[in-house]
Length: 337
Image (tube, rainbow, N blue to C red; front, side):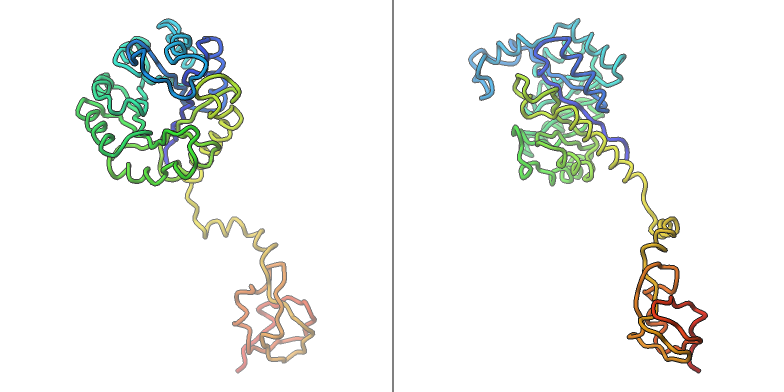
């Protein structure tokens, strides 16, 4: 099993502050992730002013929020430099318009994460594919028909490095709607690496996704769930994110190191001696007694005749007087002629 690529989704929770964004990147990197992801919203190119707000925009319009939290080209370049040179993590962003791709090409991002709402935006998919960069395609609000067309469009326009993510666009997503079963179907349907974009609370669902073959895990990250923003309250705080990364790496080590049960037994010889049972006398026995099952007890340590071989002693004669709780050995018994 190769290393799982783990993305920390920062989004716009940085509040438009370069300093706060750098703090997000730094702390995310310390959790052990491979990549930090932002969102590039150019409001005038992605939305009409009259477009309805999602329910979580209550104190300001979406336009006001996106414009307030936007970074300039130079600020994006600085965040990319800080991520890659100082924090040693990849820096990518989700484009929400054709113009956002142009913008991010100037930034120099190494990949594009296509958000769920853009899966049917075929012109955007064509443009992203033609950059020649890795495309990470989410599927949170897509039907199979829509997703099939999106994958076909990307491949037909030159995308050769594609990862499709199972995702359910509910915030938070209850476990029963996680769609873990879809991972295997995507693997068979598209023949490309499959990942999982997680909106559940806790770590069990993304860990399960890794065991099912997900090669990429994306999860929302925040310094605190009390922060402002559309994603903060449903995001993962640093300690929990670090635990997720550690648990995924543990899974990788487990999958990468198959165990031979017979070899393990050799290595655990001393443990077997301490914890397994030997056949012992259940009572005092006289020399010449013919052994029956009622004469046996089974007690630690396991350095005598194993309890698994009790049938081999039945009907044999003992060669000496034996006391209760004495361990039987091969020299204590003889076959009846």
